Amino acid sequence: MITLRLILAALAFAAAASVSAVEYNQFLADKSTLSFVSRQMGVAIDGRFRKFVATLAFDPARPTAARARLDLDLASIDAGSQDADDEVVGKPWFNLKAFPTASFVSSAIRPLGGDKFELAGKLTIKGKTQEISAPFTFRQDGSNAAFDGAFTLKRLDFGVGDGVWSDVSTVANEVQIKFHIVAAPVAARK
Amino acid sequence: MPDTRYTLTAIVLHWLMALLLVGLFTVGLYMSDLPLSPQKLKIYSWHKWAGVTAFTLVLIRLTWRIGHRPPALPAMPGWQKAAAHGMHHLLYLLMIIIPLSGWLMSSAKGFQTVYFGVLPLPDLVHKNKELGDLLKTVHASLNYGLAALVVAHFGAALKHHLLDRDDVLSRMLPFLAGSR
Image (cartoon, rainbow over all chains, first blue to last red; front, side, top):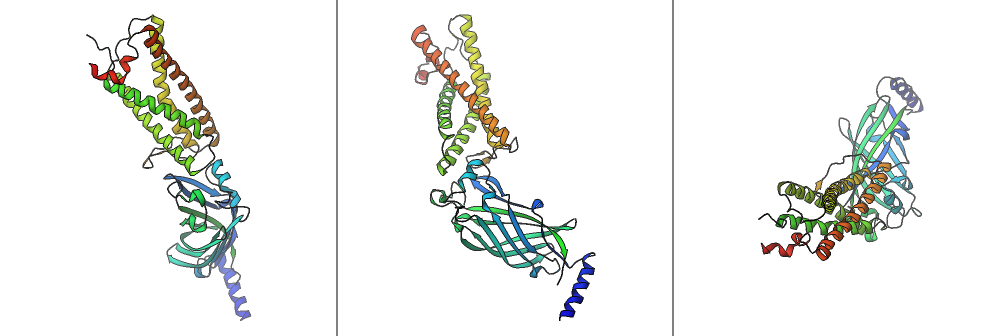
């Protein structure tokens, strides 16, 4: 088995320069963005997280074997205004003292045809975990790969914005999350 | 005999806007120092919606004014007539640029104005913190200017009514509208 693996690895390495069997697993933080759209009084407000790390391995030839993990520093939020940034630190929102980070861990990735895929996994915010799934596209961007996707979560499922803020007519329950992850390739070693 | 009173339309628009502007000013003053809360977001939205309403009304009012000359002023010194005309021009100017400055400020601060949560107004400027802070100062300063002018306008009307005993105030009073 070991020899077979070595031969496969050598073949894969040789093929890497030309076409497939390329595994994208080097997260490029400066090229990636994690943004969201919340709604206040019916008005869309753009926000983003400045600090997050994706750990991923994606070979377009073997998408079902791909995996991804995302860890984000909730304090790095830009919620659209200074008022909002100061507010979301507190207990009703993210309760940053107790829960400084949020994470996503993939459980399955399935191809939807063409450059479209679906990512499923567990999202944990404020100590609460929910199953989510998000469609995304894979695109080659020079020698890198760009993954773009979006999904909508309900903030109250995670207890984000409870108390007076649970009035969803002021701040909507639905928050759209948009990710743009760029990763550099490293030749597959398996 | 020439008209000595404003038209009913002009009277209604005048007092409607007077109420709206006093309300907008008071709420604007109150809301800016509130800590963030759902209530604050609601008040801000209502302030913006009322501001858009005031802007629409002033355009209607200006159109009406252009089509219907106001009654001539009673006999008074020339400088008073000039002051009255100057004051009216300034009031109209501020009633137009104050809501505009609020709209631009809202866009610069990254909050689009959506009239009653239904009709989105375009963002004429991009989100820009420095511009947003500058426009906030502009919006507030213009409002203090308007408040001072309104006090002077009101004082002048009272002076005409109580001291000069002419019809400058009564020709704009709604409860006399039916008398002619």
